[in-house]
Amino acid sequence: TPDGRFLAARYLNGEFWIWDLSSRETTLRVQLSKDEWSGWGMDLSADSRWVAVAASGSNTVYVYELATGSERKRLSVPSPTGLALHPVKPELAVASGAAAEVRIFNLDSGEARTSKPWPASPNSLTWNSDGRLLAAGCPNNEIGLWDAMSGRMLVWKGHQGLVSGAIFNDTGRLLASRARTRRRPRLLRRLARDLSVVRPGRRRLPGPRLAQ
Image (tube, rainbow, N blue to C red; front, side):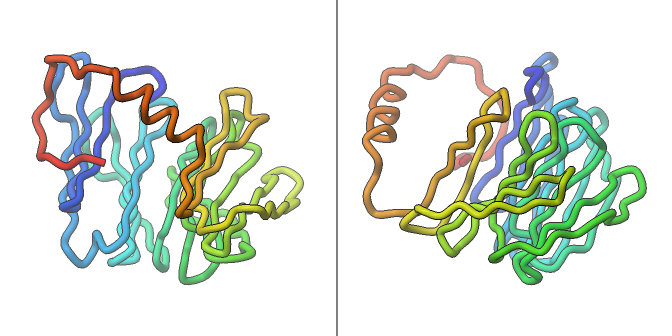
């Protein structure tokens, strides 16, 4: 989380672990069934209040309270392929791959307050810092950008492969995206080389192997 209180990891066996770094205790551990984790994702809220977990196999999004680890909401969404908790409001954006739309849920009521059709089935979501802009990568090599205040939708093209993720910078004025292409950009090669000099510390937290 942005305040450095919680650390989260997801694993290839469908497990999600969250630790409270001040106490070094496991706050939440979720194990999805094999049917559920055919497609899944996770997001934590900026205020360290919520964590949302998407399970495409069961058409379900689980919402937990970080402080207690208790399940608070269970939302039904056809094939949830991406999710993003709003940085300011108690809201959650969920991408539905089956319906090719994004639904915005109020976390207090659990109701969907609006839905937005997308140019193609979105597979990743991210809000900018003030929660006005929502970006989503799409399998047709495009990025959809939605202005939640005006309702305007922009579509960016240029990637040579499926757009698998995007993220805004701290000011919300720049958006970086990644796509599945055979050619790896020089910047990524340089980043991989720079990260190779980082040495892991000795502090360890309990959990299974193969985190991603």
